[in-house]
Length: 111
Image (cartoon, rainbow, N blue to C red):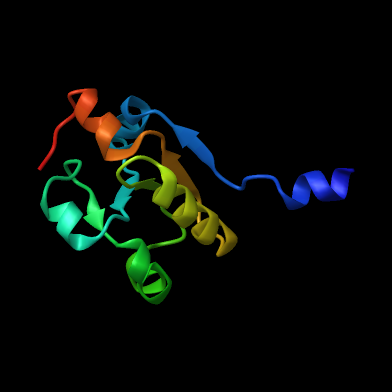
């Protein structure tokens, strides 16, 4: 049973938008994996656009393995996919639960 439980275990954590904002202010990089048009329509202040559709071709150039990375999307589904991928590549990633929708509801700053 131990082999299978480790095989399917998530390799990243999820945090609330409030905790993500605190981590961001402490130096974590926030990446938004929504498509560019969604990002332009409004995103968490300080978030960098890195669409899920381009992630596999851009992550090595744009993300440093030694940095803590927060991943956000609209609701949390795409960011979970990105976290799975990036954690598999050796990055320390954290999923932002509820995504940009939760960020807005919490009254956190939007650009």
